[in-house]
Length: 102
Image (spheres, rainbow, N blue to C red):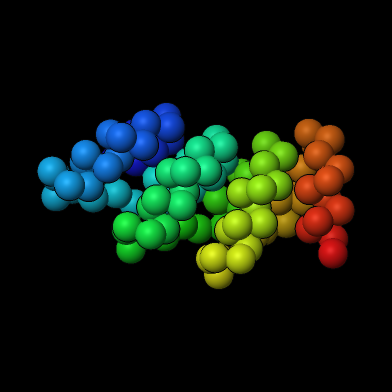
C-alpha cells in the first residue's frame, strides 16, 4: 500500500485496504504528500490509522505544495522540521516560505 500511495494509485490503495491485511506505514501518507497526491493523503487520513510524520509537511514544502501543507496543518498534528524551510528555500518556493513564517 505504501508504494501504491507513493505512486498516486488511489484505486489500488482502496483495493488493498479492502482486500488485504498488510496495511501500510506512515510512509504512505508521507510520500503521497511529498508527491502531490492530495486525494490519497485525504483518503488515508479518513480511512487508515497510521497517519504520517513530519516528513509529509517537509516534502510538501520542498515541492511547493502549499495546498497540501495547509491541509496537513489543519488536519494533522505532526508539524514540520527545519527541513521544510530549507527545502522551500532551496527550490525557490517563496509562497511556502511566507506561509511557514506566518
